[in-house]
Amino acid sequence: MTFGAFLSDRLGALVLRTACAAAAAAFLLATGTSPGVLTIVLIAWLFVAAGALAADYFRCRAHLEELEAIMDGLDQKHLFAECAPKPRTAYERRLLALMRRSGRAMIGAVSDAQASQREYREYIESWVHEIKTPMTAAQLLCRGTEAETRRKLSRELAQIGNHVERALFYARTESPEKDFVIRRTTLADIAAQAIGHHRTLLIQSGVRIETEGLDCAVYTDEKWAAFLLGQLLQNAVRYRGASPVLSLSARLLGRQVQLTVSDNGIGIPAHELPRVFDRGFTGSNGRARGGSTGIGLYLCRRLAGFLEIDLRIKSEEGRGTAVLLTFPAGETLSKV
Amino acid sequence: MQKIMIIEDDPVIRDELSLLLGNEGYQSLPVDVFTAVPEQVGRAGPDLILLDLGLPGRDGFSLCADIHKLSAAPVIFVTSRDSALDELRALSLGGDDYITKPYNIPVLLARIRAVLRRSGGAADPDTLEWGGLRLNLTKGAASAGGRTAELTRNELKILAYLMGRPGEIVSREDLIDALWDSRIYIDDNTLSVNMTRLRGKLESLGLPGYIKTRRGMGYQL
Image (tube, rainbow over all chains, first blue to last red; front, side, top):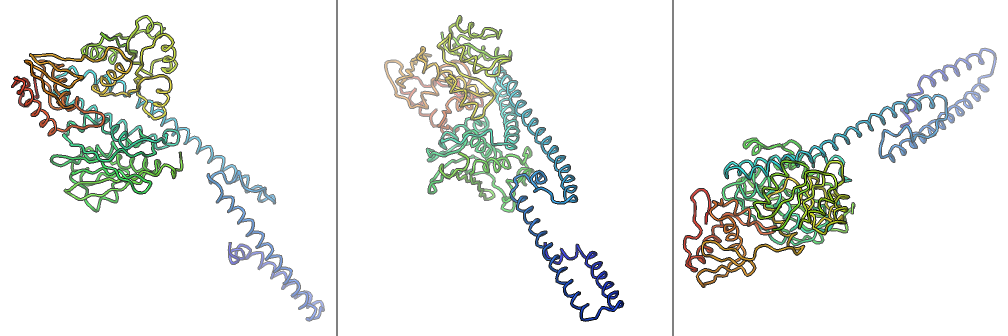
């Protein structure tokens, strides 16, 4: 709080006080007090008044600074009123009581929202698990059909599976802490899991897969990393060119491990690259082909954030796209 | 014949899985009453148990513990829950393997074979025979008319897959699907190369035209 602002708050009182002093001086002068004595009285009054004002200013400023420090130290700012220091005046007590009422209403609203979000997440999770039973049944039933139909149906079922999985991971990223386990694993395991998961899609699209140097240990959640990689595989299939090749290669960067997932697909226009990880961004390729949700890469970015994987994308139109995932060195991970 | 017990509450999955395992040469024992499951297992004495963790009214993990008291058969958990925590829990509670729904059928069958092999039950048939050709799976060799040819891993898998389905038309995609190992990913060109080499070897054994090409459909013995 600046001194100017402090003064302007008290402008009325200051004017009144000065007016009273002037009136008192006029009265004293009229009743025969000598101007010399009056001057001394006025100067003394001025000192006392200025001193009191300054003391008031410093106290006020210190009080505000204390409150601000409390606020800065709070993780959840809406709990401020609960943590504020004891009020000193009746007026402050009333103000604090009002703030607390407002704060409690807010805390209630926040915890209601959190509870309903948690319930929704739990519902999505159980729904995802339930839908997998009829999907499995449908997949088994497929076997009885004629080859071409079976091929098409299993592809559609795989697509359903991919959408369902994205919904599950979307729900999980809302409160991720309880779901992932950082363990030592290898890129080969993660890649095998992701490729195995999308084998129907990859085989039917005739993608050639090349792997190189994947025997590197990384510290991450295998399932999450495999999901992330799976999104990249799906994109590589969706935006493939003629005779598609998908290459997964790893190299060491000091203590970190970098996985490069590159394809020879249609690529992404340079001006769209900075936005591909945005939620709902589909880009000209996505719009031209349809079926793009703008969620896959957004989820990748969020998951990569939780897993502390650095995610970058490079692309050249007509030549292909490369996504670089840099896994953190085991000992620097903050959530082990 | 190896007996596989299916403990699964969804009737469609249970019936289809039963059929599938039956076609694959196993005897399937579907459970359709979910009371006293461990005792049913004890009586039936299966070689392998496929246990769905989402059974009504009973936690699959504790069920597994009870089954283990009455049967030494290996257990493959089948579940739709797939987080890393679920998997850790499953394997630490006595599951021999863990597979998530919806499963890929070749993968499921491969897991079943692997667990059965590990548990020391009767292994896969060692040799396959059809149309005058004898395929030794452990040695990786095909022989006919007194002559023998060594096969590579892929050639062996292709031939074994086809000989397991004599007369059936097998599409290239199904073959690739069957060849996909957990780490080796065969593409269309590789399949063509392997097929050409395999046919060359079969020809040298005096069996030209053993594998017929059905244009636009696939291969057939």
